[in-house]
Amino acid sequence: MSETAMDHPSTWIESIILDFIQASPDNTLSDPGSEKAWEQAIVGFSSGSDPIYEQFKTVVGPFHWTPLEIFAMAFPDQKVSADELTVISWVMPQREATKLDNRKETAYPAERWARARIFGEKFNEKLRSHVAASLNEAGFPAVAPSLSPEWEFKQSDEYVFASTWSERHAAHASGLGTFGLCDGLITPVGKAMRTGSVVARIGIPPTPRPYTSHVEYCLFLTEGLCGKCISRCPAGAIDESGHDKRKCRAYLNPVSSDYVKAQYKFDGYGCGLCQTGVPCESGIPGRKDVP
Image 1 (cartoon, rainbow, N blue to C red):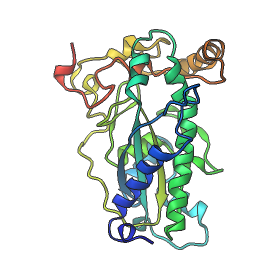
Image 2: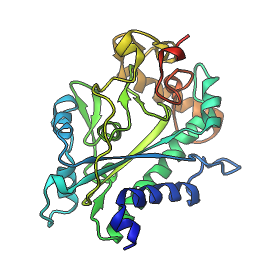
Image 3: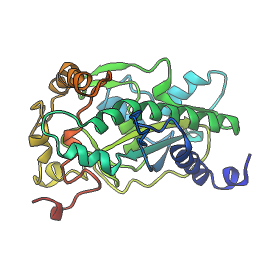
């Protein structure tokens, strides 16, 4: 085990994530030029004993795992307490070229965006596996909840469509962002992003959450300003009351998936129009960002 891993575990983990993004040949849009899907990431940490994970059982659903629950499923022979666990969360912002392309669209995803949604997320899965494997090899048992065989979609009274582990909620718990009107997570690098996480038996101080409300960064929900994501949605799935996930899903499949297959010649889907061409696209918006 390296000295950095022992003395500065957060720095060590951040380097594992950033080095993999830079060096992995799997970080690609799978286009003819093998363009990278991602260029950078920000990383946050939260304690396995943070009460917010119990709160998720109320706001998401009783099926949502706590860090201790998913860790116990992965390592049933280990006796561990919640405060020995750390949730490692990262956010990878979309590249500028991807955001620029999608910003111009009004009805369907740009090709770069659709490729980032499919092939970029496949890389994100490999990143989850790589982070967990690196920790395990160093003697810190770790599991990527979203890659667990037990992970599944669920119905939620609050969120309609939910899952047993939400990457966005883990990022929120780890100080990386708050939710917006369209349910996207607004982060310091914006809402146009993908996120992932790993739960590990390692001691790392939690990243402070610089917000007190789960919607603090959304100008519409806090001050009644903006609402640009409403007009950006091609499915009419966003209004002043929030995000209609059923309309959104019906647009993604078959409308978006048919378009991607016909126009871009691969099986996939995407949208992201509510994440681009909006004040929170690339950062936390302020009043000055609203026309």
